Image 1 (spheres, rainbow, N blue to C red):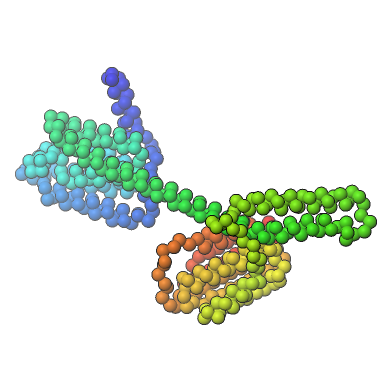
Image 2: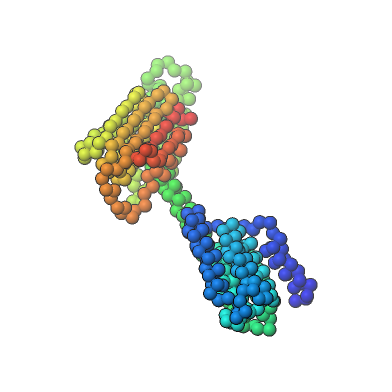
Length: 401
């Protein structure tokens, strides 16, 4: 490789690490923020403690340059890693190159030309950089770190090799942690997407009876129109026949489509789907089991469209089940209000008064299923803590809007 190519290669790396205004980072989850703060401050204190324990040779901290300058910069670099890991590494790399040329006395007692605090800080910063940046950035970090160590210790190859091994190992470990974090995030995202699709398939299977009933009624009414009305013009009779034929074709295609939505046992639910007025039966069964449940109904809930009525029932069923499971001993209030334009459902429970049973380890998606049902109908959904308890509030439009 020619000198010009080597020069261009190094300039490219320098531009990447030192001149780039912003590099793509993969920061750790927010839940680790406080843990990182404690660990970082503890590491900065450790850097200072190590350099105090192993001062620069027998000449003390004031010869030829006060050693606390190097210790202070190393500790500050560790703290800077909370904000920008790459700048923290830059500070440590600079100290690797400058420290042995100005203050070479650490090698007397420490056998390395750098202070023990700087070695720990550089290793930790390499680990943090590996956790945050892509492999191409890590490769340049490794090369420039080794080059910084070689500036003074070129005649002592063992120092350069030891520094490269320590920093390289930290970078590899940090990158492995970063890749694992990315894989876990992708897995969680795929699981959430699969769960959402599964919930939608359940909703579609439950709604198939409702749709099939409406299309069957349409076909029957269109086919019997010529017998129910005397003297219909021939073009009107033809129109009704075409409507009946279209409805039958729709039923056939719907049966084929629902074959894709069969459950794991290859079965489709054929029982009549429950309606919103049957929520009263749910409440009665819970009262019989000793649960304090109140029910308040306003408006004519029997005129609610079948699809909305089914979703409202399933939402109330899941909300009541959650209240009994997660808030034993609490009082549960159910409110249903039907207006000409919308149906409102609120299920609220108070704080638990009995010990909450331990989780059985199964993954449940009750809130996700409720949200998907409301979204499918174009409604509004709210669920969350409320005054020590929990509330689920749903508004479903009755006009399909």
